[in-house]
Image 1 (cartoon, rainbow, N blue to C red):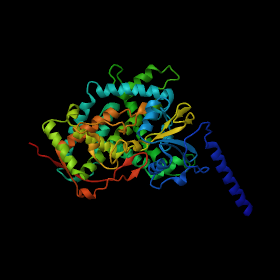
Image 2 (cartoon, rainbow, N blue to C red):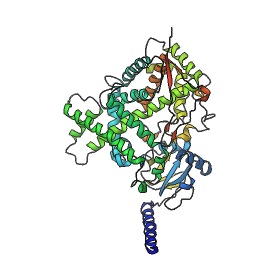
Image 3 (tube, helix red, strand yellow):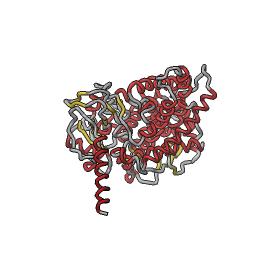
Length: 495
């Protein structure tokens, strides 16, 4: 009996040592300082129970703006502060343009598609996507017209509720999703469409799981935990169901494709596939198509809708800010037409409020991981090729060198002494450099028109007093998620 226990222990220890030796990166560089790692565990014992972001911010205080953390056996370089992030992602843009791995997504995306590709694959897909989205976002029906139509649909839908208390999540998801759907799938969906609502629920569930503490732990030990049940299994299942829908949509597009009149992103991609079918090394194949569409659909839906959820929770918390926005709306736009993008330059306070919402909400605090594409010197350290790098965007959005009282919501952060919109180098909600969010322009336009159209038509109310509203996110991992809330949209009577 004792011999069998001894053999079992010997086998287990040997297996773990083998796992460590296989997964331990063979670095030949000089990485920045950081907490000393333990075998297999890395810096787990130095991690804060409240998540990776809190851990990284505490380590910044000790090690400075550039330091190394071992996530399990992987050394990852952390970049903190506005100047550090810009020096890497802008000044050395090509070197820092690689994409790192998000462990919970990797089994599905596997390095395919627009967001998670590397090398020539990424460059080819990004070029194609930029041109295609510009065409369908700015073509015969501009993205502004699409957003205004969706805003009108939302206003009419909210009026049906006659000020009743409601959870705004599905409405904000629907309007954001319909903009990206019109570009990618060539159609918009009714807010009560069952298939549409199912897809939105899958995105919402997946986003919440990705932000959970369990998902962050999986990021540290994915090589080991992938063999066991956990959030990663549910995420893969959810994404596969969305991919099944995308597959079905691609087949419908293929069956009805008119080569002389492409309707959307999928049509344009299919035409490129046909053009390059004799090229055995082409990146225009089915796998890159469906993963690119998944990436665009997911990112285009959840980031804008979550920002809108934060926006109106913050407005409930600070009703005087909402009132000042409405005063500016009444002066510039009035009540008889929808907002337009031309109005933005005449509405500096509203624009500043939206900027401050994005800064304060800090939706992607850690940012998607980067990877250096070659051996790279950075601030006196040698980062070997393929070293993973995390730009901690939260450290820029809360950078005290650029924002007075960065932990406080204050639109004055983006206004100068004359009340004019003031730009800031630290405003990096979409990241920066070669991997800056592809949909930044569309997202900024959506936020302005949706936010302004809602406050043009409705006053806001809550059963909770402003001083009792808690803006603390329920999760803070790869992204931040606001607590669920309910809100009254009360029709405004403006003369």
